[in-house]
Image (cartoon, rainbow, N blue to C red; front, side):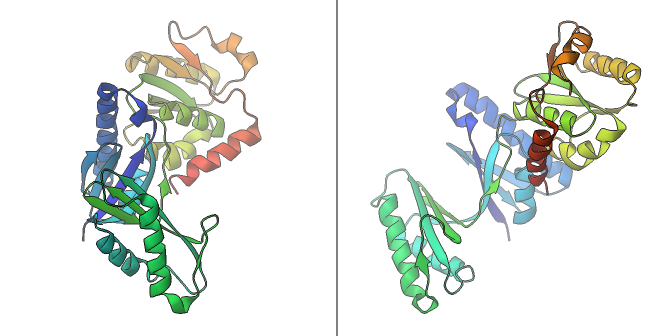
Amino acid sequence: MVALLLVRYGELALKSPPVRREFEGALRRNILDQFVRDGLPGRIRSDRGHLYVESDDGARGANLVRRVFGVTSVSMVEDVASDPAVITARLLELSDRRLQPGIRFAVRARRTGQHSFTSQQLAGDIGGAVLDRFADRGLKVDLEHPEVELFVEVRGPRTYLYFDRFVGPGGLPLGVAGRLVALVDGPRGALGTFLMMKRGCRVALVVLPEGEPFVRETLARFDPTAQVTRSTADVESWTPTLARLAEDVHADGVVLPIAVEEYSRFGSQWGNRVLFSPTVGLSDEEVSERWRSVVALVS
């Protein structure tokens, strides 16, 4: 059975129509890259503000989509006609196993387009139907801190029902903001690289031995096409390696995990290329905390 994934993006929707079309095209290509690399068939369609991915494996597909920069969240959904009776009947069927006795729940309804009902009316009617259908379970409505949320997203003639949102990295799609090279020597270098990738930059990597796990287990999952060059930790080795890679890929800038006082040492070595150090203002503890949130996106 083919699963349907509802894919949301954030910043892209704020761009002008021509830029939004360009960025959405990059987002679609990046999603398909993930599917191709993983060997999972996938098909994409779109409407204003969302993408829809059809996959033979919903859970596996959702894990791939949530690694794509530009994606804010993804949900496995079921679509039905935008008729209140149809919506309610199907949601009651889908909710049966999730609504355990005594549980607190909420209905979250959103609507786009012209319909004979409002979002608030739809949510109230569905909530009442849930309480009636499962009256023997002692369910309670709790809009502030529910244990289960029933999501209903009405978009024109079709409505999408789901229970979970899997968070993505957000930001901009890879490839819309230039090319960089980066040194990955551990969590600080890996986080700096991630932050620049999140702004839409394609990043070629020079990886020191200490940085290998961070690339293999995390960064490579966000960009399976990233060019990786390995080097020793000796500064006389990685510096020329990074410089050569910058020339090879025609990089616009260099990303280094350096402190403010090191700019005078490394800042003049890259010609006209911009030097970035995204983590320069973060303590080691802050770097570790942020990196854990990055790892959670691919775990």
